Length: 138
Image (cartoon, rainbow, N blue to C red; front, side, top):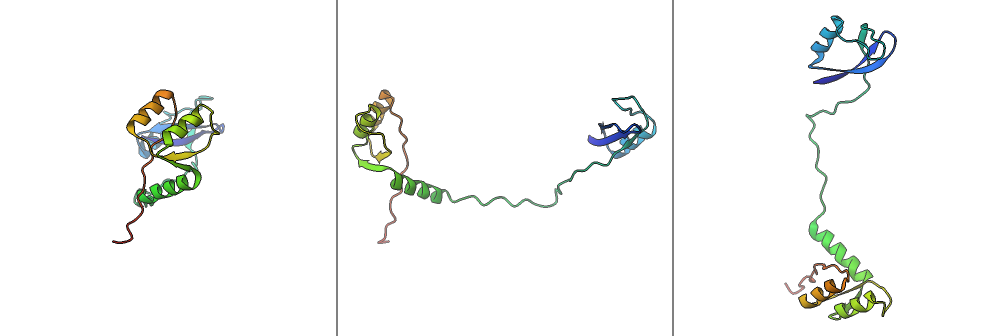
């Protein structure tokens, strides 16, 4: 199916759907198409201002960032903006959660048992993979 812009002799513009261009021309010449606004059967194809993108031209896929680079940038952001509380993460998170200490961004380590306890207490946290520094002796 193809859509053509059409115009009746009274200037009304509308669309018509046809099997192909020759079917459009045939229906117009036989007076089978009428204006939906005024019923006029003196209808012609109107200029249709649009562009068709060539399928022959291959699209160049966008360059995707390296996942390790994204992870490293994220890790660097966390290191720069979160206080490292080490193995005291669960204790500090609870203090912040219950208002004992001022709210701040913290990072550190926790055990599975501590993570379960934090979940049970309703403390929101996110586990982030740690990027080990590159071995400089290799």
